[in-house]
Length: 427
Image 1 (spheres, one colour):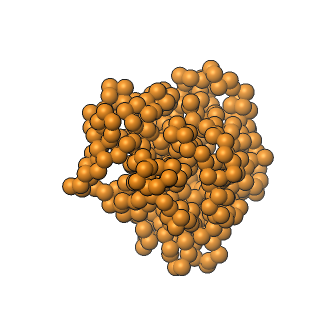
Image 2: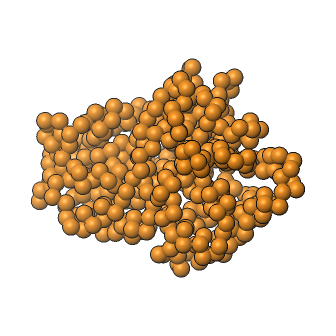
Image 3: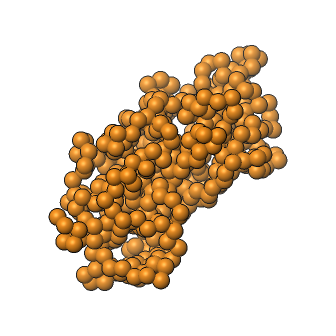
């Protein structure tokens, strides 16, 4: 089919959802991808420091839970290596820190072997996991994690030193929103990733030479047009087409796909329907600042506890927390220098290499209800929606949402696993 005879589709946003949609649909349609930033990739952001490619956004995935993303990487011939996904917690105001790397790091100090309070903490973790595994997902629709923890009388130590740190680390939630996290989403995600088990957890992987490798491969083989640094854009839907005005220019398309964050849609869509307003006003985002640095002050005090994910908590001085990724361990960086990515540090790290603002979806009960309604507006007025926010907020959710739209537009997948899998979407 010639480019002249192909129907034209505009895709707004170049994260995993927009890029994968562009790649898949470009075989059948004439695609133009619009991006407001000066780079393509969204949360996929790799920096070269001291000759080393270091990821600052998307870092890891696994074969079990990222079926379509894995198929996409295989199709692009992108290589990955096994990563380490250990977790450590430090309370700056108390002599309390632990790591889940092994038994020695759990009982980081010999006195803890004889500490009743610490043994109680460990046993309570076990009780929490066992109880969660028994829950019926169908009975959890209107419950939050806070409801569940209060009902079962779990201690403040378990809540503040283990459960909430895990949720905040995985979803980049803040201390205010974490209590509202939907219990059903938490249980479902942890069950699917075997996180309630102390063994048989999936092997996590990182992309060789940084996650930007798959972006570069897409762009090298792309058959679609890309526009970056688009600062002003407005979408006008007509009866038979879609008009896009951007940066004092105008273009006509047959269809439009929104692959932006959910909170940006109503800002750029002219005359949205009442249902669209009702849906997309329910999605909230939190602003998170990520620093790439080498400052060890954002790691556990005991170096033996250093893990891939390090949750640093302060009760008194800051009444807050930050999360540090040890990139040497996550990406197997062989260097005498340590490289860290810290999210929302209490103070700026010394001599940091880079800082970047990311938006992350806030999970609550209203958001989950809105997710389910998106299916009903797909294709209406030649408009489609995809994005990681329709699922759990990760790369697999983003690519599954774009595959769903590709299916609606009757476009086959270009990779071997041609089945349309939507295990992460509420459809």
